[in-house]
Image 1 (spheres, one colour):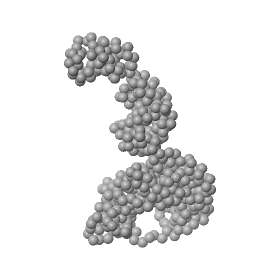
Image 2 (cartoon, helix red, strand yellow):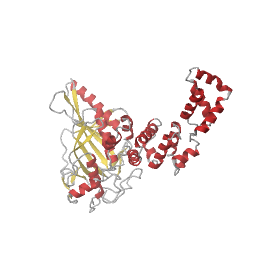
Image 3 (cartoon, one colour):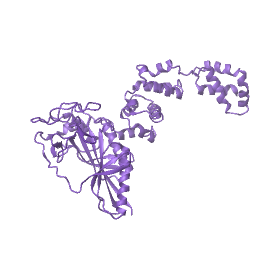
Length: 476
């Protein structure tokens, strides 16, 4: 029997505010000692009251707008009660009844739209590290501001689940509301998967795979669940509604706990925080700060950069903003964007550079100067790439593209009179006589040998294209 998978995804996005959601403590605990970024509010000493971080509200508005969502003028916080060692308060402060972000959608590169049901603000829990006979609690992450984005069950394949999570990551990074560091859990995905027979008007029993932190693991987990549930249904058995974990090394999900009954979290309004009331003017003013999104860049560069190259570059928001700056400042933008995009793509793919390589990008002025030198045939394609790479070299910091090219001796000789003299010198050498005769006899391929001799004579500084033109003229 053929089954149709239905997938819904909940994504937790850590906002990159300077301080936490309810206290004035450093919000970026990456690389910090355990329990070093905490306050009495975080570990819930008696009488300590939460104080709402207004920057989190502003970032929530930008995140919502990035997903084409409505922003609710009124929202409020609730207490979600549960007892676990990483939650000192005994409850989580979240938005259950009145979230700040309403309905919207995310459009995938394929054009498919995945609807967003809502997204809400909440404080994160701490982190438990488990050992054989004990566990340790790190409260650094307590009350890190999160937005939890809940999709509608509009996804029906593992590849679309992958693309949705990746596009969501891009949107949040381009909107500058998160560091987007997947390794450190800045975005985490909970994936719900269910199967139903083809033609059925009811969804199947779902399982939830928790805490996935890469697009590939989302895709693999969905593929595994589809196969696992298909085997169960083919055997005439029922899928159990449960929470499952993902073992990336084994490539399989494992049962964690049953969810046959909805857990009663005893939600109640948060008494220590008043409702949030936003004016239409404030919402519009903050919304206007949203930078260009991936869809905008696809429209700007769609006719200039090949689609496969563009989709690679869209994984690097700072790079796309730099290309946008060149596009805005440079009149010969098409040739410039094409050259720079190809250089970046070749460096990131062929040379397997990481995203950190792009932390300190060359200025738009340096890149435009490089483009001009290439267009004016002052640099060969190989030399252009060499200068481009040197623009990232800390030892070359502060030097422009032209100065770097001069120091490396890469500027091509374009003076036709000077080039003619070098060509004449090469053509008088006995070792080139046979190649000259062969070319006159119609053997085109020997022209490469003669060009090489001229390049050798000029110590690599001659413009090969100009040299070829001169040789053809003299040998005809």
